Length: 207
Length: 288
Image (cartoon, rainbow over all chains, first blue to last red):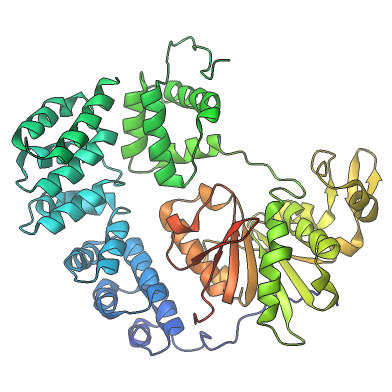
């Protein structure tokens, strides 16, 4: 046998794109039984107005990881308030995998996430507040340290504060020194808080 | 011997704590991990960038790097910290993995008359796809039983023309065994001309990986080599590339990334496969 050359030609497989690509049809294809069709629809809906609503609705029910991933990428690329609102809804999902995927997606939306970070960090559900701290882990935004300091100064839940202290060990400046000392006093019986706060203090002081 | 760079005129120094902080952050953002033995290399470039960006300390530079909305400085630093060069048989452990582990699995799923399809992107000046062809000819017995298609793509038409021409410097071929040199190259002046047999083995095409209209026809590949490209992409572009490869692969197909790249940090679409010679990423056999 040998090396052979074939010209790249338009693909004519099961997901051939000879069906209409207008937004109404894409919305229908997003509910297709074939996951390949759903993936392509999710990808091509980037140019459709109000795509976020349909995508989020599908995301909550979608079992195929590959389709969920494409939906999330499109939501990130849409980069609008409606897409973000849908992602926040999914933070409350019982599906841990979906929650984690959404946290990863929200890390990529610093401009959109920043205006709602205060409300996420003040959410009544401590799990949502931990997820908000998780988002801060890789969020490119100048206020990250201030938000984390706010958490360790005010949040009543030890696990939320522990997550914030962990992250402060990487991002904190001298501004966080006193709040970290106060955090240790506030949770004086919690060894993990002491460990995390001491690590952050050590890194800030450079010792 | 000291691992620290000489103190620059500005007096800037990267402390061990700073290095650790940077190392952790850079690893999380790019999947590239620097050992302490690379300290000199990393410190030197960090100091260069601290000075060039008008910062007065590692701390202020790190804050800028971490929180800059555009991610421009991280991109610049990533380029600086990665070596962008190509040559024949670069990271050849992956080619060994291809012939010893990947292709035997691939052909088990094939029927008589099927061909094995390999996509190399980016093509650059052709060293990688031609290395694949040479490796298959020299070290894969299956080449006698199966047809193989190698398609190599790049966004840059000038580099594609150079790849098709197949003429290389001594540096580019320095790792090619003498026996293979004799067989596949002919010396012309200071350069080495690749044989027509190998030049004819590869189909070169222009593709912008970020453009779905370009990539949509690329289907049914068994193996994709995409090495040392995604490190230059931003997060969203990396995810889109991972999804493009997913569409381009047959179920059970493989993606090979550069040694410092990790698909696990980009996408959950693939299974990690640890073979004796390399870690690669596989689209599930049952995937549609």
